Length: 216
Image 1 (cartoon, rainbow, N blue to C red):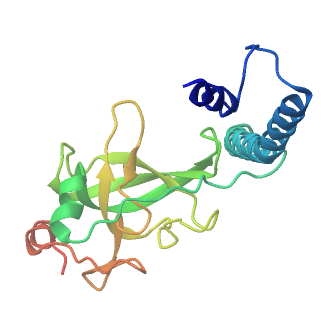
Image 2: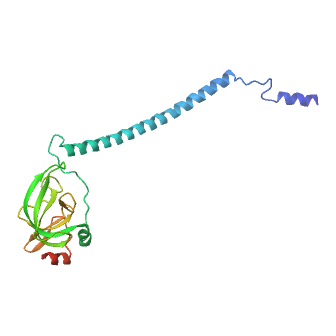
Image 3: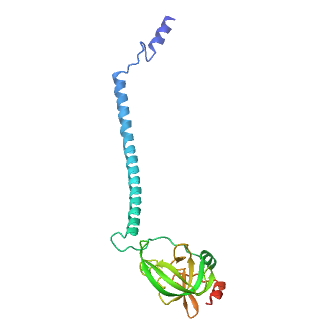
């Protein structure tokens, strides 16, 4: 029995007396492990922070660019402002196009004037109304129609001019001139009794509107 007890004591890999203090070897190994782990994690942390800064900087640059660009348009920016570039609504058929318009009429442009009070070149045309297919306006009256000045930018109604006769599809406003529903589907030039669409407009007017306005 004495032999068994002695073997049990000597087989204990951590004999007493017990202590909570680490040996010098243990302290060195722990220090090396901590430093290695910190070195492995540091690059990922730095990279993550750098990526976040880049994203925030890029976002700020976009916001600043938009603000500066819009301010330049509204204030003149030291040069001639062009119309702001926006995506225009495009109508795929005559029903969608005519439903969008508040006014559909046939008329003649009798005069125009230019303005830039909205921050870009704009033409205000005085149109003598001849016939009306939609909207609250009487034939024989003159109304004002606003549109981006032809030739002042990439998206302008280049086919409109003084003396021209047109079918106009207009959006109306209470305290401002009416405007074309868009720059290329808002007007049809009357030529030889026909309503000719502007370039890039492949939508014809409906038979009912043509008949009401007396065009083909």
